[in-house]
Image (cartoon, rainbow, N blue to C red; front, side, top):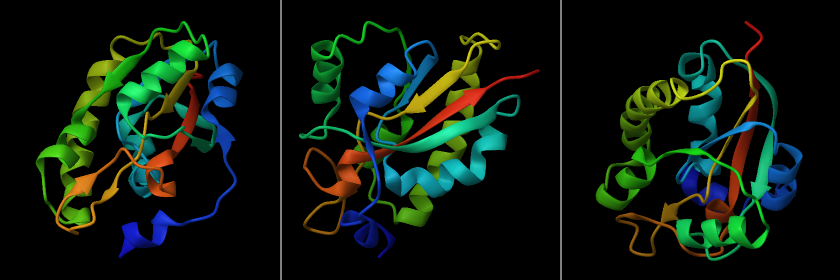
Length: 168
């Protein structure tokens, strides 16, 4: 029900290109498949996931269709964003290999994200800002029995972004 509500949600978004240009001097962390359906988990877990960092800005960005990782990488190349990044795949792995109910999926993903983010943060410079964003979101497929992405629905194409600072 929650994912169905998000599917046609109307919110104010910026283009992915605009956000990536705006935060081009930050370190980039891509969480594969972190669409708006994961936003509540991210908001409630920020201090747990990023204990030494503070959210300075957050918002939503529009990913172009089709909502796939390959298309997103092509967009990065086409828009000339020569930027290194770290990438976390645990969420995308779960949506492709799991049929868990949404709430259970978020509980499993929370634990895996905490571990994966901790690993990535060891590679990040603590004194540099950090931009966290995604390549696409996900939805329930037409059968209602599994998760999917690659389409042009709002829930697949709108992803949150978080700009963090570490002032310690």
